[in-house]
Length: 82
Image (cartoon, rainbow, N blue to C red; front, side):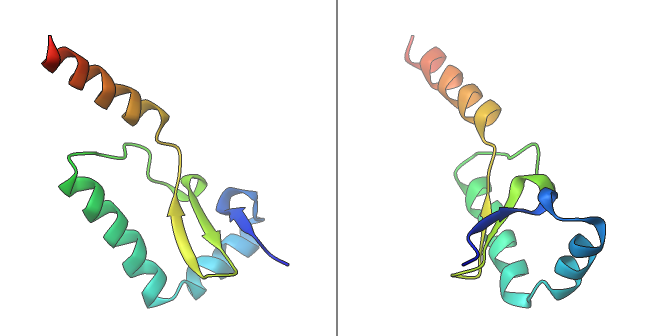
């Protein structure tokens, strides 16, 4: 059973095959995620293959590694409350 897999963990050849086989729906999902984040005033400053996961069971794209961004958002919100 395949589960979530970091794209970075794939070999170069596997990565090429995956990128070429990325469906239109998966591409749209990634665009929708970035658009949603933009509307929430969040910029993911490290969007690259190593921060994208593919759930093979559901065929959904997931964007990961928000550590720096969330920390920055919390700091801004705290400053606004003072």
